[in-house]
Length: 304
Image 1 (cartoon, rainbow, N blue to C red):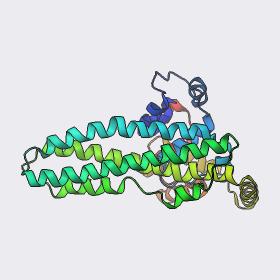
Image 2: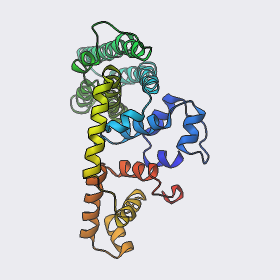
Image 3: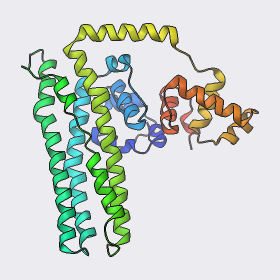
Image 4: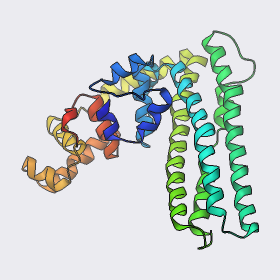
């Protein structure tokens, strides 16, 4: 577990929402999940989606996940955004705006207030409509005319307007605003925007497919069978050399360092890395590191 966090420190926020806040020691992911009553396969799936924007779960990943735990995570995330992030954001913005003329303050404050209202409305819809609908499916009951398609068709990216606010603060606020406070709030916004974007991906790439599986299990079985058939015919395993290169990448080594250690050219290293990305579907170093850990390719003590 500690090695997973070292591979992507952004996952600390995810762990806090699940309640995994104590010392990890030498606990494995399985140990930590078991101790908190959270399904390990679901945890790894959420971590992959959260860490790598290019990662798209396969049907078999969805089939192995536990929907109740996905709902628990999303509800905990809503609580974090509303009770923690927004409560920190508002006062910081007010401090930054203090030197501005009243009309500028009012304009930016109105923009933020409207964004906050939209975000709360987005979460309330999920809490009051979507999650109860999912629970009714889990309980074996019908839920009227609502379906996950209704949620999917009206699902919006809750980080877009936050990006507009970021650009306003970065480009349009007058120079009289405190520079350090500007940098501080911009750093906060960049992290929050990334987090919200990953939250949206968890909903779209994990929640929606899981609910579709409940709504139409027969169709999902066909998708799963087709995927398995295609995987048998097209799957390419990493070669031993590619696994060695992947371990080097996970350790943070540069292409030249990898080439020197393995007595190959930099061009060959680049070629291997392209093949690794093609075969795993993972593009980022952080994502490849998580992949290496989850597939037992790397000694956790070798990660710097």
